[in-house]
Length: 336
Image (cartoon, rainbow, N blue to C red):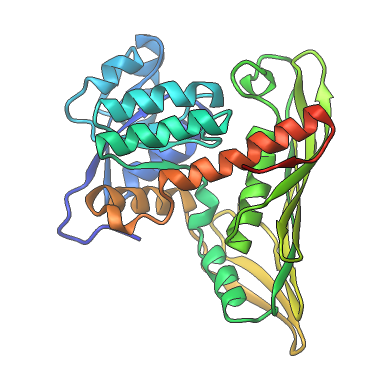
């Protein structure tokens, strides 16, 4: 979804100097038709100035508050560690800024709900930045399911794993600010299952291994029960060889996505197997960060276009909160 040619660009500010902001989101805003990068912010003026130069932003702010006081900024991308998302999302909404917040939206369902409520009170948009959903391969996969190409979908198996250095410096190993596999990578696999079933799980069971110095999970596998004979297995890891996959099995066929989260710019392939045989479907290459920015910019002008409102992020957080509780308790937990 892109803005119409006569729609003025949305003026963006970026909070945080992380790798996704530097290498993906800021460049996407810069080449988008619907957005214009006007300012970036970090905790110090020096870091903010460095980021501004790197991503070609006209202005830099040495505090997050200063960016929120910037009258030209209309929409904010929050690229901070997970534990900082609620505070700065709510403060952004209260400042009248639309919020594209990096996943995971929060560390719990209640804080995510407060984020959504703050956006509603201020009449601004809030969306969780699951960029993969904006790639053309996912529209194709969901269309195949809707058309009955695999019968009734019954089982999803998805994973996103990688090997992250465990030197303790990376915030993903910090329990206090929301590190660990569940909130960083397993969340993608869970989101894919929800996306494909277009439904919410009723209960979850979780198995995980802990990185003891930090108290966070290195590897997490979540079994999700969606009811009506639908289940999913979602795996994420910060300590395994890098890989990704997603498959959905139905009563009459199966769909396999080769690179579901990070497909790159080249065309993506979907393998469809059913009673008619086996077919590889190639979808166009795309910059899914750019597609996400264009979608969000369009939603700023027309809220009715939003495919992923803040409430969708709250629903995702309910599942993650139940999964974390299931891991730490060792028992299955309901999603509520």
